[in-house]
Image (cartoon, rainbow, N blue to C red; front, side, top):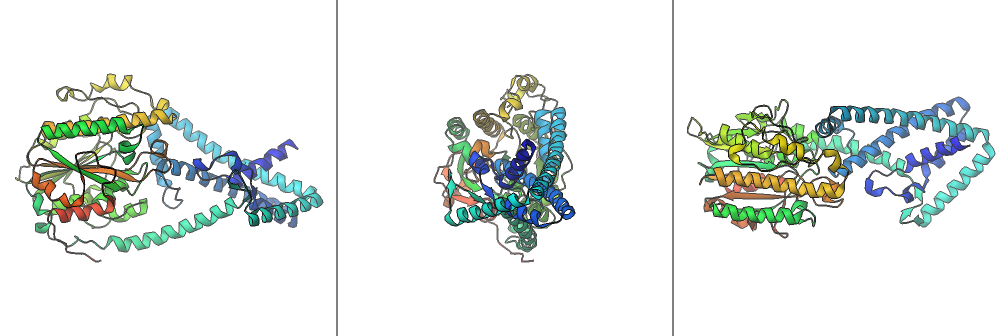
Length: 538
């Protein structure tokens, strides 16, 4: 009898399991699932063999739905959206790589094996549970029939009257609803793919001649920089903001002392918690790239990227510094970059800082030595794209600033990395994660702005922004998707061009500064600096 009770508890728990961590709670598991009532009625009506087959197949299917619910739970917690079974399987490999960088290969292999074993065990247990319960119903047909009828009446009554316990409806149809949602998501994904292909072919500046692109930035030393996970929460959350805001204010003063001035605002990112490349490509394409299929579509297209606009002028050499890139990166062509330095081409001999291959300060110094200090041989100007990584989760250990002349090959960071927090000590602690995240943002902003005051020239124009908010455990379950963005320059004419944007003076955007979708930035930027629209419609 005890085994049957456990089997029933497992089946009911799987049927009513919510798809978000926020939804977890005892009240969620005391509901009456409609699927159980219908399933019991069906089992009572079937002969033995088809009943057993249906019970086993239903158990495996329920295990599959449970896995999808658990994936939804993880994706909602880390990326602020549910798992897409059409597009997101490839991200599981990225998650495994992240764990390996953060916790080590042995722990990752153990965790992976544990997950696989858990999925298989869940399928077996639910299949066996369903078969056992179906046999129990068949042995006690009279009692089971009466119980099913009573359960059905209770479910209908609770549903009709909207009866609740602790704010949770007693009558549940969680699994059936999930199936409808997944079916609709599948259909919507395919529909979105077809529609987005058409959208990506329309480009306001797609046919603009190079001579009419960014004429007001000719001769400038143009730099676009993304700071990993630099979100609005860093500037406004009561735990992170005091330190981050103090850093932004002090660095604004340091920039002013060096002759630089800044304006800042907010952009709403197309992604949240991760998938940084969606934020990068949304900013540069002027398209809302919110999933992997859209990303692949744009990367295979000739839709103009903001970085490629500089290359098309014929007056700029273009270069990328990507310390987070550790494999082939065919996207280089779409971004219009003549040269890209990846993680293995910057001469780093120090330790990794969890996922981050090297500290931002080192990457910036290498950019200075290999790129920025050297004028293009053909007399052109330069446009650079930098993707900084030190503020990537799990924010342990965090690099510290060292003397710029002491960086060498990065070996100086060995002691700093060894003395820092261990990822396992931070990942599971929400308060500590938020504190360390704030410190990581302070480090990245400090490294970037120190580099600018040390090496920037009268022609340097720096645009830097976050790619997305940090994960929900740090930013909160109802955080916005907003990220800070700033333009910094010595030439007052550069900032005069965006004076009508309503942005805040300095590096710290005001709470009520304008908020644009990230996809609006490309066209606004091109327009502000004199580009002439020549639309491409197909």
